[in-house]
Length: 555
Image 1: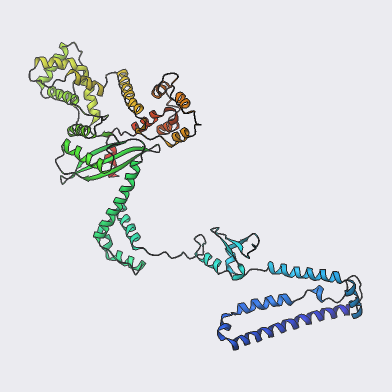
Image 2 (image 1 turned 180 degrees about the horizontal axis):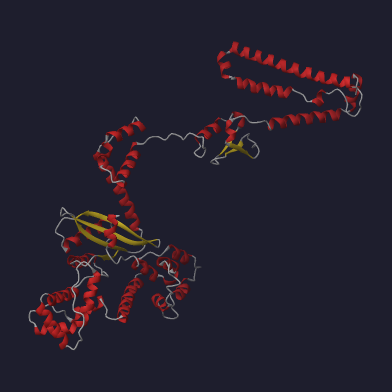
């Protein structure tokens, strides 16, 4: 095609597009003017951005591409006259329709891929295609919350979410409704945790800060704080009572007394137990305990606290120091609870202590006692030593010195009529149980006690609840194989109990298992040893000293 014809075609195209644009701008102005005449309020509702969006939509639908406006054929490099164009259109009617369909598809594709200008698309993305009902799945890029909305209705919902999204760095947190009861509970918890005075809420500066945070706040006095703190205590107590009631094993206790400078007495009762194979200790009570601090008074107070917590049927051990009042206290508790305790006090220890006091009371008695030692044929050994009433280690040392000199004390009782506290044979045997003389005697004594305790658990397997792992294993046994499983699990074929099997196992190498967790060992072997593992769970929760009762209040 000659160059002049090409220039003419491009000029016609440009003029056509310019006229179309001017016509649309004029029509837009006329449309806005008509709206203003018909309804000024309606014209205010339509913003400039809305009119501009409508104008862009109409202009895009009316504009034509270069192929539609070109009046020449690419295959024939000559200008086509009007008749030739009509002839070619008649011959190629199908191709014109195809080209029209292709142009329409291109326009639709351009609309779908149209750039989105809303700010919400910085925080959202479209997932998948549009659903048949016209909705589209849109997901938040920060919190991954999804919406199914019709985008033709706008994006206000997405904009609101982006402003309040908790994970959006530029969002504004949603305001929370102020609840005065929750606020009072938080202040009461802070007073307890930080050891603040109840009058903290009456401080002028504190009230100014509260009023600044919430001008509509209602202030409260110190008496209300006392009530709030007591309510927190009752709620925590109820939660702990529920936990202790659901403990599968038994519970051990330690108790101790203190006396303040002002001669005010205080008593602390601590519970020790194994829950989910974890050793735990909780202070049940730390209360004022006025005199007299006799054994009967202590026993009644401890029994009152145990009943208050509903644990009188779960007591296993009560550990106390060896003060003289605690000996009587344990006797009263045994009567109240009607069960034997492991660390029970008796008259044997008191008789031996009085015997040592008699010998150490004067120098003449010590010389007479040395004569009795030589008379019974004992070699010169270390003399007797008196224990400290509140220290168990000194009591063991006293027994270690007195038991070998048993016959010398018997001779002293025969030659000195004033010595009237000589222990009987039964009391000496009890003293030997407290402190066995040889390692073999100690092992035999412990073995005898373990077998006796195991017999109690064997006779009453329902006294403690089975562990979850054991219950799951038993429930997984097929129907009809229960007796078969019980036969082999209890070693019925060999006649050995779970305790015999455990004691027959080789001792673990201490060097190879320096970090062995004893409770974890019994947890892993609970299905092997059955009631023995439950007994071990209770025994391992026994505190051997009252240090926990003394240290927890201080910490």
